[in-house]
Image (tube, rainbow, N blue to C red; front, side, top):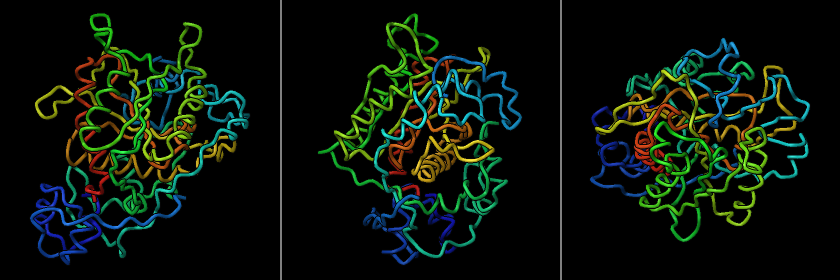
Length: 388
Protein backbone atom coordinates (compact mmCIF):
# COMPACT_ATOMS: atom_id res chain seq x y z
CA UNK A 1 0.00 0.00 0.00
CA UNK A 2 2.69 2.47 -0.96
CA UNK A 3 0.58 5.07 -2.71
CA UNK A 4 -1.47 5.94 0.34
CA UNK A 5 0.53 9.13 0.06
CA UNK A 6 -1.41 10.00 -3.09
CA UNK A 7 -4.67 10.16 -1.23
CA UNK A 8 -4.75 12.34 1.89
CA UNK A 9 -8.46 11.57 2.34
CA UNK A 10 -7.58 7.99 3.30
CA UNK A 11 -7.57 7.65 7.06
CA UNK A 12 -5.02 5.51 8.85
CA UNK A 13 -7.87 3.20 9.93
CA UNK A 14 -9.06 2.71 6.34
CA UNK A 15 -5.46 2.23 5.22
CA UNK A 16 -4.96 -0.55 7.76
CA UNK A 17 -8.27 -2.12 6.68
CA UNK A 18 -7.15 -2.26 3.07
CA UNK A 19 -3.71 -3.61 3.98
CA UNK A 20 -5.20 -6.42 6.05
CA UNK A 21 -7.49 -7.48 3.22
CA UNK A 22 -4.93 -7.02 0.46
CA UNK A 23 -7.19 -4.64 -1.43
CA UNK A 24 -5.58 -2.70 -4.28
CA UNK A 25 -5.85 0.88 -3.04
CA UNK A 26 -6.27 2.40 -6.49
CA UNK A 27 -9.12 0.04 -7.36
CA UNK A 28 -10.75 0.66 -3.98
CA UNK A 29 -10.63 4.42 -4.37
CA UNK A 30 -11.91 4.35 -7.94
CA UNK A 31 -14.81 2.03 -7.14
CA UNK A 32 -15.66 3.11 -3.63
CA UNK A 33 -14.98 6.80 -4.10
CA UNK A 34 -12.29 6.79 -1.42
CA UNK A 35 -14.87 6.44 1.34
CA UNK A 36 -15.65 3.01 2.67
CA UNK A 37 -13.43 0.03 1.90
CA UNK A 38 -15.22 -3.02 0.43
CA UNK A 39 -15.26 -6.28 2.34
CA UNK A 40 -13.26 -8.01 -0.38
CA UNK A 41 -11.22 -6.94 -3.41
CA UNK A 42 -13.53 -5.62 -6.09
CA UNK A 43 -11.13 -5.49 -8.95
CA UNK A 44 -7.67 -4.40 -10.01
CA UNK A 45 -6.85 -0.98 -11.29
CA UNK A 46 -6.52 -0.88 -15.04
CA UNK A 47 -2.96 -1.10 -16.29
CA UNK A 48 -1.60 1.81 -18.26
CA UNK A 49 1.31 0.66 -20.36
CA UNK A 50 3.89 3.16 -21.51
CA UNK A 51 7.58 2.85 -22.34
CA UNK A 52 9.71 2.82 -19.25
CA UNK A 53 11.86 5.17 -20.31
CA UNK A 54 27.98 -8.28 -6.18
CA UNK A 55 27.05 -10.31 -6.05
CA UNK A 56 28.54 -13.64 -6.25
CA UNK A 57 30.36 -15.67 -3.58
CA UNK A 58 33.96 -14.68 -3.97
CA UNK A 59 34.97 -12.08 -1.50
CA UNK A 60 37.14 -9.77 -3.54
CA UNK A 61 39.25 -6.69 -3.36
CA UNK A 62 36.23 -4.42 -3.02
CA UNK A 63 36.13 -4.97 0.73
CA UNK A 64 39.15 -2.71 1.02
CA UNK A 65 38.18 -0.28 -1.70
CA UNK A 66 37.84 2.61 0.77
CA UNK A 67 34.26 3.27 -0.27
CA UNK A 68 33.51 6.56 1.44
CA UNK A 69 29.95 6.65 0.15
CA UNK A 70 28.86 3.49 1.91
CA UNK A 71 27.42 4.13 5.35
CA UNK A 72 26.97 0.52 6.45
CA UNK A 73 29.81 -1.91 6.87
CA UNK A 74 27.15 -4.59 6.79
CA UNK A 75 26.94 -4.12 3.06
CA UNK A 76 29.83 -6.54 3.12
CA UNK A 77 31.34 -7.81 -0.06
CA UNK A 78 29.14 -6.54 -2.77
CA UNK A 79 31.99 -7.46 -5.00
CA UNK A 80 30.58 -10.96 -5.00
CA UNK A 81 28.70 -9.67 -7.98
CA UNK A 82 31.82 -8.92 -9.90
CA UNK A 83 34.91 -10.51 -8.50
CA UNK A 84 37.29 -8.71 -10.81
CA UNK A 85 35.34 -5.59 -11.64
CA UNK A 86 36.92 -2.94 -13.78
CA UNK A 87 37.70 0.36 -12.15
CA UNK A 88 34.99 3.00 -11.94
CA UNK A 89 36.39 4.94 -14.84
CA UNK A 90 36.85 2.01 -17.16
CA UNK A 91 34.73 2.65 -20.19
CA UNK A 92 36.96 0.90 -22.66
CA UNK A 93 34.58 -2.00 -23.21
CA UNK A 94 36.27 -4.47 -20.88
CA UNK A 95 33.83 -4.99 -18.05
CA UNK A 96 35.29 -8.29 -16.87
CA UNK A 97 32.25 -9.56 -15.06
CA UNK A 98 29.64 -8.69 -17.59
CA UNK A 99 30.96 -8.61 -21.12
CA UNK A 100 33.73 -10.15 -23.11
CA UNK A 101 34.22 -7.62 -25.85
CA UNK A 102 32.79 -4.31 -24.82
CA UNK A 103 30.43 -2.89 -27.38
CA UNK A 104 29.92 -6.29 -28.86
CA UNK A 105 27.47 -7.04 -26.09
CA UNK A 106 24.99 -4.61 -27.58
CA UNK A 107 24.26 -7.23 -30.22
CA UNK A 108 22.82 -9.46 -27.51
CA UNK A 109 20.45 -6.90 -26.11
CA UNK A 110 16.89 -8.04 -25.58
CA UNK A 111 13.98 -5.86 -26.73
CA UNK A 112 12.93 -3.20 -24.25
CA UNK A 113 10.11 -4.37 -21.99
CA UNK A 114 7.65 -1.59 -21.31
CA UNK A 115 6.53 -1.70 -17.73
CA UNK A 116 5.22 1.82 -18.03
CA UNK A 117 5.69 4.93 -15.99
CA UNK A 118 2.24 6.43 -16.24
CA UNK A 119 0.50 6.76 -12.93
CA UNK A 120 -2.63 4.65 -12.59
CA UNK A 121 -4.18 7.69 -10.96
CA UNK A 122 -3.73 11.41 -11.36
CA UNK A 123 -2.89 14.17 -8.98
CA UNK A 124 -0.13 12.82 -6.76
CA UNK A 125 -0.32 15.02 -3.68
CA UNK A 126 1.74 15.77 -0.63
CA UNK A 127 1.90 12.65 1.53
CA UNK A 128 0.48 12.53 5.00
CA UNK A 129 2.07 10.82 7.97
CA UNK A 130 0.78 7.38 7.08
CA UNK A 131 4.21 5.84 6.73
CA UNK A 132 5.14 2.68 8.60
CA UNK A 133 8.34 0.76 9.09
CA UNK A 134 10.06 3.91 10.30
CA UNK A 135 9.52 5.68 6.97
CA UNK A 136 7.80 9.06 6.94
CA UNK A 137 5.90 9.04 3.68
CA UNK A 138 5.72 12.81 3.40
CA UNK A 139 9.52 12.92 3.20
CA UNK A 140 9.82 10.70 0.14
CA UNK A 141 9.91 13.84 -1.97
CA UNK A 142 13.16 14.75 -0.20
CA UNK A 143 16.04 13.25 -2.20
CA UNK A 144 18.46 13.40 0.73
CA UNK A 145 15.98 11.57 2.98
CA UNK A 146 15.43 8.87 0.38
CA UNK A 147 19.14 8.37 -0.20
CA UNK A 148 19.86 8.16 3.52
CA UNK A 149 17.10 5.68 4.28
CA UNK A 150 17.02 3.51 1.17
CA UNK A 151 20.37 3.44 -0.61
CA UNK A 152 24.07 2.71 -0.40
CA UNK A 153 26.09 4.11 -3.30
CA UNK A 154 29.42 2.65 -4.38
CA UNK A 155 32.14 5.12 -5.27
CA UNK A 156 32.23 3.91 -8.90
CA UNK A 157 28.83 5.45 -9.65
CA UNK A 158 26.56 8.34 -8.77
CA UNK A 159 22.83 8.68 -8.18
CA UNK A 160 21.49 12.19 -8.49
CA UNK A 161 18.06 13.70 -8.03
CA UNK A 162 17.09 13.19 -11.64
CA UNK A 163 17.65 9.44 -11.32
CA UNK A 164 16.47 8.58 -7.82
CA UNK A 165 12.96 9.99 -7.89
CA UNK A 166 10.63 8.33 -5.36
CA UNK A 167 7.57 10.06 -6.75
CA UNK A 168 8.24 8.60 -10.18
CA UNK A 169 8.92 5.18 -8.68
CA UNK A 170 5.60 5.27 -6.85
CA UNK A 171 3.80 6.02 -10.11
CA UNK A 172 5.41 3.17 -12.05
CA UNK A 173 2.98 0.57 -13.31
CA UNK A 174 4.47 -2.79 -12.34
CA UNK A 175 1.35 -4.94 -12.15
CA UNK A 176 1.41 -8.38 -13.76
CA UNK A 177 -1.73 -10.39 -14.40
CA UNK A 178 -1.21 -13.98 -13.29
CA UNK A 179 -1.29 -16.63 -15.98
CA UNK A 180 -0.36 -20.20 -15.11
CA UNK A 181 -0.47 -21.21 -18.78
CA UNK A 182 2.68 -19.36 -19.85
CA UNK A 183 5.98 -18.51 -18.14
CA UNK A 184 5.97 -15.14 -16.40
CA UNK A 185 8.92 -15.20 -14.01
CA UNK A 186 12.51 -16.34 -14.56
CA UNK A 187 14.78 -17.15 -11.63
CA UNK A 188 18.46 -17.75 -12.36
CA UNK A 189 21.86 -17.50 -10.70
CA UNK A 190 24.84 -15.77 -12.30
CA UNK A 191 26.93 -17.29 -9.49
CA UNK A 192 25.42 -20.71 -8.96
CA UNK A 193 28.31 -22.00 -6.82
CA UNK A 194 27.70 -19.71 -3.86
CA UNK A 195 27.48 -21.75 -0.66
CA UNK A 196 26.12 -21.25 2.83
CA UNK A 197 27.78 -21.86 6.19
CA UNK A 198 26.56 -25.44 6.56
CA UNK A 199 27.49 -26.60 3.09
CA UNK A 200 29.95 -29.20 4.36
CA UNK A 201 27.19 -30.86 6.37
CA UNK A 202 24.55 -30.29 3.68
CA UNK A 203 25.76 -30.32 0.06
CA UNK A 204 22.43 -28.81 -1.00
CA UNK A 205 23.15 -25.61 0.95
CA UNK A 206 23.86 -23.55 -2.16
CA UNK A 207 22.14 -20.61 -3.79
CA UNK A 208 20.34 -22.74 -6.38
CA UNK A 209 18.48 -24.47 -3.56
CA UNK A 210 17.27 -21.08 -2.36
CA UNK A 211 16.07 -20.29 -5.88
CA UNK A 212 14.23 -23.59 -6.06
CA UNK A 213 12.31 -22.76 -2.89
CA UNK A 214 11.40 -19.31 -4.23
CA UNK A 215 10.10 -20.98 -7.39
CA UNK A 216 7.96 -23.29 -5.27
CA UNK A 217 6.51 -20.39 -3.26
CA UNK A 218 5.72 -18.24 -6.29
CA UNK A 219 4.19 -21.19 -8.13
CA UNK A 220 1.90 -21.76 -5.15
CA UNK A 221 0.78 -18.14 -5.52
CA UNK A 222 -0.33 -18.73 -9.10
CA UNK A 223 2.67 -17.71 -11.21
CA UNK A 224 4.31 -19.80 -13.91
CA UNK A 225 7.99 -19.74 -12.94
CA UNK A 226 11.06 -21.03 -14.76
CA UNK A 227 14.11 -21.77 -12.59
CA UNK A 228 17.31 -21.80 -14.63
CA UNK A 229 19.96 -23.85 -12.83
CA UNK A 230 22.57 -23.67 -15.56
CA UNK A 231 26.09 -23.00 -14.30
CA UNK A 232 27.60 -19.74 -15.49
CA UNK A 233 30.53 -19.33 -13.09
CA UNK A 234 32.41 -22.57 -13.75
CA UNK A 235 34.52 -23.27 -16.81
CA UNK A 236 36.53 -26.46 -17.26
CA UNK A 237 35.87 -27.37 -13.66
CA UNK A 238 37.30 -24.11 -12.34
CA UNK A 239 35.50 -21.17 -10.74
CA UNK A 240 35.43 -18.29 -13.22
CA UNK A 241 33.39 -15.37 -11.97
CA UNK A 242 35.27 -12.86 -14.10
CA UNK A 243 33.10 -13.70 -17.11
CA UNK A 244 30.02 -15.12 -15.42
CA UNK A 245 27.78 -12.22 -16.47
CA UNK A 246 28.74 -12.74 -20.10
CA UNK A 247 27.90 -16.43 -19.94
CA UNK A 248 24.70 -15.76 -18.00
CA UNK A 249 23.50 -13.19 -20.54
CA UNK A 250 23.83 -15.73 -23.32
CA UNK A 251 21.83 -18.22 -21.28
CA UNK A 252 18.99 -15.98 -20.17
CA UNK A 253 18.67 -14.34 -23.59
CA UNK A 254 17.96 -17.78 -25.01
CA UNK A 255 15.32 -18.45 -22.36
CA UNK A 256 13.68 -15.06 -22.90
CA UNK A 257 13.64 -15.49 -26.67
CA UNK A 258 11.94 -18.87 -26.26
CA UNK A 259 9.55 -17.48 -23.64
CA UNK A 260 8.68 -13.87 -24.51
CA UNK A 261 5.83 -13.99 -21.98
CA UNK A 262 8.40 -13.68 -19.16
CA UNK A 263 8.13 -10.23 -17.61
CA UNK A 264 10.02 -10.68 -14.33
CA UNK A 265 13.69 -11.72 -14.10
CA UNK A 266 15.30 -12.45 -10.72
CA UNK A 267 19.03 -13.07 -10.36
CA UNK A 268 19.43 -14.61 -6.90
CA UNK A 269 22.82 -14.35 -5.18
CA UNK A 270 24.46 -14.82 -1.82
CA UNK A 271 26.62 -12.00 -0.51
CA UNK A 272 30.05 -12.20 1.08
CA UNK A 273 30.74 -10.36 4.36
CA UNK A 274 33.39 -10.38 7.11
CA UNK A 275 33.33 -13.70 8.96
CA UNK A 276 32.12 -12.15 12.20
CA UNK A 277 29.00 -10.71 10.60
CA UNK A 278 25.69 -12.60 10.70
CA UNK A 279 22.85 -11.14 8.62
CA UNK A 280 19.82 -12.58 10.38
CA UNK A 281 16.47 -11.30 11.60
CA UNK A 282 13.59 -13.16 13.24
CA UNK A 283 10.55 -12.96 10.97
CA UNK A 284 7.33 -14.83 11.64
CA UNK A 285 9.14 -16.67 14.42
CA UNK A 286 11.90 -17.97 12.11
CA UNK A 287 15.58 -17.03 11.86
CA UNK A 288 15.69 -15.31 8.49
CA UNK A 289 18.62 -14.16 6.39
CA UNK A 290 18.47 -10.48 5.51
CA UNK A 291 18.28 -9.69 1.81
CA UNK A 292 19.57 -6.80 -0.26
CA UNK A 293 18.33 -5.45 -3.58
CA UNK A 294 21.12 -4.44 -5.94
CA UNK A 295 20.90 -2.08 -8.92
CA UNK A 296 23.49 -1.45 -11.60
CA UNK A 297 23.29 2.08 -12.98
CA UNK A 298 25.42 1.78 -16.13
CA UNK A 299 27.19 4.99 -15.22
CA UNK A 300 30.26 6.33 -13.46
CA UNK A 301 30.61 9.73 -11.80
CA UNK A 302 31.92 10.93 -15.16
CA UNK A 303 28.79 9.91 -17.04
CA UNK A 304 27.02 6.98 -18.75
CA UNK A 305 28.88 3.82 -19.68
CA UNK A 306 27.96 3.92 -23.34
CA UNK A 307 28.76 0.28 -24.07
CA UNK A 308 26.38 -0.87 -21.31
CA UNK A 309 23.07 0.79 -22.16
CA UNK A 310 20.06 -0.08 -20.04
CA UNK A 311 16.77 1.27 -21.40
CA UNK A 312 15.03 -0.39 -18.43
CA UNK A 313 17.14 1.28 -15.76
CA UNK A 314 14.39 3.52 -14.33
CA UNK A 315 11.92 0.64 -14.27
CA UNK A 316 14.50 -1.57 -12.52
CA UNK A 317 14.97 1.15 -9.90
CA UNK A 318 11.23 1.55 -9.42
CA UNK A 319 10.87 -2.22 -8.94
CA UNK A 320 13.54 -2.45 -6.24
CA UNK A 321 12.33 0.71 -4.51
CA UNK A 322 8.75 -0.54 -4.29
CA UNK A 323 9.87 -3.92 -2.99
CA UNK A 324 12.12 -2.21 -0.44
CA UNK A 325 9.42 0.16 0.76
CA UNK A 326 6.86 -2.61 1.15
CA UNK A 327 9.40 -4.79 2.99
CA UNK A 328 10.11 -1.97 5.42
CA UNK A 329 6.42 -1.81 6.25
CA UNK A 330 5.60 -5.51 6.46
CA UNK A 331 8.91 -6.99 7.60
CA UNK A 332 11.04 -4.38 9.41
CA UNK A 333 14.72 -5.33 9.39
CA UNK A 334 14.34 -7.89 6.62
CA UNK A 335 16.11 -5.84 3.98
CA UNK A 336 19.43 -4.05 3.95
CA UNK A 337 19.72 -0.84 1.97
CA UNK A 338 19.48 -1.03 -1.80
CA UNK A 339 23.01 -1.13 -3.17
CA UNK A 340 23.86 0.95 -6.25
CA UNK A 341 26.89 0.26 -8.38
CA UNK A 342 28.22 1.42 -11.71
CA UNK A 343 27.91 -1.50 -14.11
CA UNK A 344 24.80 -3.16 -15.57
CA UNK A 345 24.63 -6.75 -14.31
CA UNK A 346 22.29 -7.87 -17.09
CA UNK A 347 19.44 -5.87 -15.64
CA UNK A 348 18.58 -4.48 -19.06
CA UNK A 349 16.77 -7.62 -20.19
CA UNK A 350 13.41 -6.76 -18.64
CA UNK A 351 11.80 -3.81 -16.86
CA UNK A 352 10.96 -5.90 -13.81
CA UNK A 353 14.47 -7.21 -13.25
CA UNK A 354 16.00 -7.53 -9.79
CA UNK A 355 19.31 -8.76 -8.48
CA UNK A 356 18.84 -9.96 -4.91
CA UNK A 357 21.49 -10.90 -2.35
CA UNK A 358 20.16 -13.49 0.12
CA UNK A 359 22.21 -13.49 3.29
CA UNK A 360 25.93 -14.24 3.13
CA UNK A 361 28.42 -17.05 3.61
CA UNK A 362 27.89 -16.82 7.38
CA UNK A 363 24.18 -17.66 7.11
CA UNK A 364 22.77 -21.17 7.23
CA UNK A 365 20.80 -22.67 4.39
CA UNK A 366 17.70 -22.69 6.57
CA UNK A 367 18.02 -18.96 7.22
CA UNK A 368 18.39 -18.29 3.50
CA UNK A 369 15.38 -20.47 2.61
CA UNK A 370 13.30 -18.77 5.30
CA UNK A 371 14.02 -15.46 3.58
CA UNK A 372 12.18 -16.65 0.48
CA UNK A 373 8.85 -16.59 2.31
CA UNK A 374 8.69 -12.81 2.95
CA UNK A 375 10.39 -12.22 -0.40
CA UNK A 376 7.72 -14.21 -2.24
CA UNK A 377 5.08 -12.23 -0.37
CA UNK A 378 6.40 -8.77 -1.25
CA UNK A 379 7.02 -9.81 -4.86
CA UNK A 380 3.44 -11.00 -5.12
CA UNK A 381 2.08 -7.84 -3.48
CA UNK A 382 3.99 -5.51 -5.81
CA UNK A 383 3.19 -7.50 -8.94
CA UNK A 384 -0.51 -7.50 -8.07
CA UNK A 385 -0.48 -3.80 -7.25
CA UNK A 386 -1.48 -4.42 -3.64
CA UNK A 387 1.47 -2.40 -2.42
CA UNK A 388 -0.34 0.67 -3.77
